[in-house]
Length: 195
Image (cartoon, rainbow, N blue to C red; front, side, top):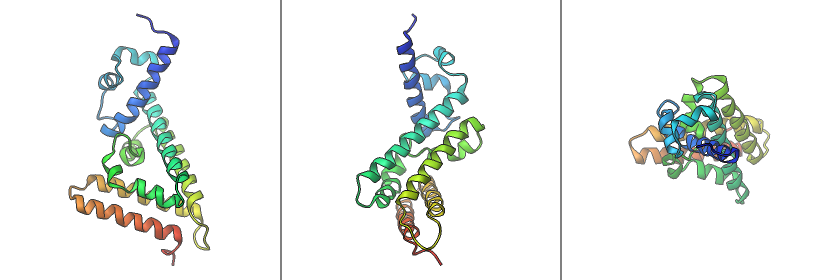
């Protein structure tokens, strides 16, 4: 049965959204096309009518995940009187540690993305730049390091802390790691870590 152009586009968007979640949960190679399409409520046969390749879908799903993460940061920052603290509290939380499918794609897929084609890495590059711009706007100006440099350190610290906390089997130590990282973000942003 032939589907309308509007339905085909809706199906394509559904596949991208579902793939965005499933890739973060299972990794790029941890789920096949059949299961991706099944997750979207579609058959595998329609995949190549909508996407050139799995890399095409991986790039689109990664872009969608990064856009979602940036929107989330902007929303949280915009709703707080202390936006940087709010972003750090959201990101460096036990809830985010457990929230792989809807969590940060950098923490969930960073090491996978590093081994992918430039087409797949490009949405990560754009997303990293967007995260850095947000952090740069939220970091108070100081006489020390340039705010953008601080943004790079803070983003690296936060992504690394969440990634490591997800690996750990000791939940208390994992929670301590996230708390320590949150304290470090505050010190770096305020300039109290500068020599």
